[in-house]
Image (cartoon, rainbow, N blue to C red):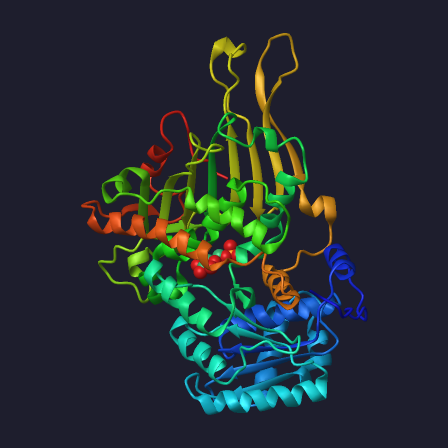
Length: 513
Ligand code: BG6
């Protein structure tokens, strides 16, 4: 895969970077960002590239070309990026950008204009000569999805998508990857008309989060968890992605997507697959993704009449955060006064295989919940015979994987309260990333950009995973469409609608992190 060594010019305090540098090497390349005048480039992509530069992980020959419609120049593009790195980059990355600003250039063209791609090709060849980027290219689609089709077609027509003489050409596709299975399949077809699957990197930024990757390490680098990781011992699994923010200025987009498409189809399903998958035969991209896709295949589509009982959807109404009044969803900009789009959804799923047949997985995600928190809580079954506290059930053991913030792993168990009586109380064993490893945690995009340069697709969604996730989500959306029930309401700043508790079935309760 990789055969050129990464420079070690800059000093780093990031232990992960040290490890990556010795383990893997990146070949020179140019990253072409389509839609480079947008927010993603300024807030995430370029600050993340500068994080990689700081850690000495960029290849020696490296350049970025911003491709967009607006009449920007190299200078105005660089000024905008410098501002982005200052605002959103890791500490000390601004100087990194200043030192390599001339590696960034701007290319103005319409996405549908073939001449613009012909000119791009010439420009890239010139960059290869000047900056030693060796004919390797990564095309990053950071445009609205409506432009994907023209870009893909033009990359194919002009031969830019073709790999030859050992040079690579890869495409990174941002979400949303379709809005249902039909559009996802159509998009996959368009992508495949220009690129082979091994050249395609579909971004789900949750997979780039350190602690999401740690799910695999926890499960498969240890001997003690896996024997318990099944329906014999696990009562149910709760996966929560809660956000305190509302939809803000994205009301128009959100109206069309709702939380089910925006979060559950991608981020929560990805986390679910990592928690539920079988051990892969190796850590190669396809071995891991083969196992992940099997989890989704084992989840049955809902029949429309099952959906009301297995899901809850709701909208936030006006409420308060830390004493400050916040709007209800229907009062947000770009949102219809009678909107039925859900800002909260909870779903009970069953993975129908030998490992999980009787263990429900409950997923929930919402905007304007009390805190920003992402966690996986594995709730274990009660002991078979209850000796203590008069035979009353105690709180179950919970293994908690805290994805963000306050990243770590905790185990809840009962311990005897000191004293003459036999009383049991819950205590916690707690591992915290920050305390154990120190150092700064890199943004998820850093890891994903690096992996795309390395050609490692493990942390990217494969076409079949995306389609399977849509199949499940489509069946929920179809049920909601047919249902006479409207979305419930919850006051902004609370943990969602009452009815979500019923989803867990008797004797269980949602965690309130
Ligand atoms: C994005 C969604 O994919 O993920 C946003 O479109 C959401 O609505 C965001 O806010 C959450 O990401 P993170 O990394 O902040 O948890």
